[in-house]
Image (cartoon, rainbow, N blue to C red; front, side):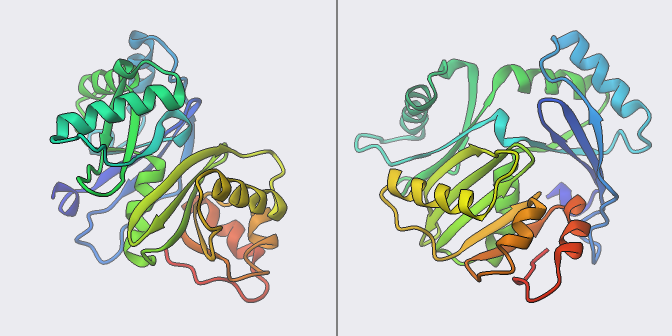
Length: 274
C-alpha cells in the first residue's frame, strides 16, 4: 500500500552494476522516471566492503533515504515451475517440494537460497529463489544507510507484474536484459514453463525461433502463436522481428531502450503498451 502514497528509488541490481531511478507516487497521473544511470558495483564483495560500497553509491544521491524497490537480475536468481505435489497438504509441504526441485534442477544446496512463490494448491506455482547471502548483505547495507526496502523481486517477476493485466491469459512472455532472456509460457493465466537463457552477442530472428522451438519440445508445449517481449530489447530484434510478423509484440520497453525503439521504427510496428 505504501507505494501508492510514497515516492521511491527503483534499484536494478546485477553482478557488476546498479541502475537507479526515481519513481513518483502512483497517486500521480504519471509515474515520473528519471534517466537510468548505471553505477559499477561488485555484489561478490564480502559483507563489509559490500556495505561500504553501497553507502558510497547512495551518498551522492539526493533521495537516498527514499523507499527502495529492488529488482534483481534474472542471472542471479533461479526461477522454475512447481507442479502441485500429490501428497502436499500445506504450505510447508509445497516449500519442501520447491526446495527439492531447486536442488534437482540446478544442483545447488537448497538451504543457501531463499524461496518464494505464488503458491497454488491445484495449479503449477511459479517459484523464484534468491541467494540468502545476497539478501543478507542487501539487508545490512540498506539498514546502515537508513533505507527501507519496499519490495525485492527478480527482474522477470517485476516485468511480468507490470504487464500481466494488459496481456492475454495464453501465450509466451520474455523478460530481456543484456545478458539473458527469461522465457515463460502461460495457459489460462497459469504458468506452464519458465527458463532463463543466456543471450549470445549477436542474437537474431533465427536464434530466437530456434529457442522457442527447442523450449517447446523440451516442455512438451506448442510453439507460441504470440510472444510478448519486455525489457531491454536488442535493436536487432526490433528491426528483424517486430517489423516482419505479428507473432512478436512489445509488452513493456525499458526506459533506456525507448530511443532505440524510436530510431528502429520506420514502418508498421506492434502495439506498445508502456
